[in-house]
Length: 227
Image (cartoon, rainbow, N blue to C red; front, side, top):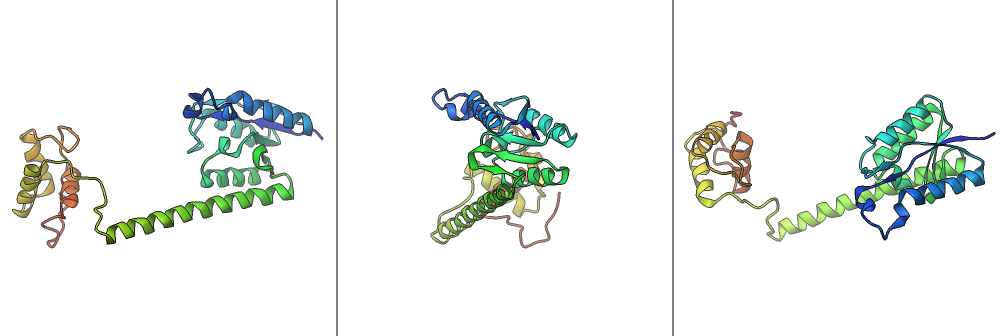
């Protein structure tokens, strides 16, 4: 029985600018998919190419169209030349797999030999997701450990304070004198004092950020006001 497969291709904005990197090009992906279709006897339905689209999320016109066709039962599966053309997010890939399982269509990623219509393909897909999740957690753990070590070594973390020292002293003085965050912001706006990044509008949150990055709120020991 011939399988009808929705063929999906994507090229990121960065790859689109790289003339010397054809591996991620639209035509290279199409060629790989056509060769696989010829070898497996698939009938291909081409989704609109997402040329210049990020793989950080699934909100892409071409992929939305492809998923719509599959949800409507117009095809038996989704095929991509490379898994990262479908998604760079473990969570998004897992979501697509759950959708495929619920709606009874398969996912094929040629570069990793994934074909969820087979037992081995489903095993490979689960391994890929597990390894990717493990890698994400390891990176997060290492980052956390590095930040802790830096903090213990006396390295000051966070964004640098870009507000001039006289302005910082004024904010802290007003705050110590009982002014609310909003009242301080209003005074700075009235006097047309520039923000850290050259803006002309202070807010309560802006003032709070300056206090936090310059040693903490002088009124931290008193009941917190939300003004």
